[in-house]
Image (cartoon, rainbow, N blue to C red; front, side):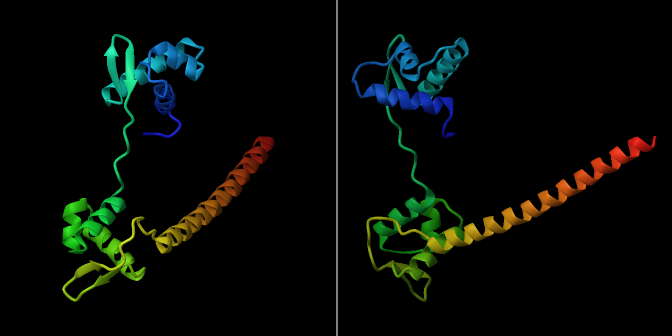
Length: 182
C-alpha cells in the first residue's frame, strides 16, 4: 500500500465516516473527500471496488458499506521478538521456522539481543531471554550503520552527478563552438 495514494485517502475518509455508525455510500465519500471532477469520481468507484475486494468495505445493501479497519501484519522483527518472549529459550533454527526469515537475519537479531544484554547465548547455540520487556528493543547500531552507508552512496552519486554535469556542459560548449566554425 502506498502512503498518499488515492485508495489510502478513500480509506481514511471511510474510517472517519465510520465513526458516525451509519452506512457509508459513495455520495458521503465524495463529500468527505471534496471530489469535484468526473475523473475523481471514477477513481473513487475504483477505490471502493478495491477496498471491497480487500474486505475492508463490507456491503450492507446496494451502494451502502461499512468500513472494517484492517491492521497491517506485524513486521518480521516483531514476530521474532514475540516468539522469543513466548519461548524464553530457543535456537536460530527455531526462530527461522517460526518467523519465516533467513538464518542470517535471525542470527543477527539474536546476536543484537545478546549485545543489548536482553538475551544470553549458550555453547549449544541456544539463546535464553534474560530481561523480558514488553517493547521490542531497537537496533540503534544497525540504524547508524545504514545511515553511514546511505551517506556514502549519496556522496558517490553526488560526485558522479557533478562529473556528468561538467561533461555535459563541456559537450554543449564544444557543439556550440563547432557550429560557429561551420
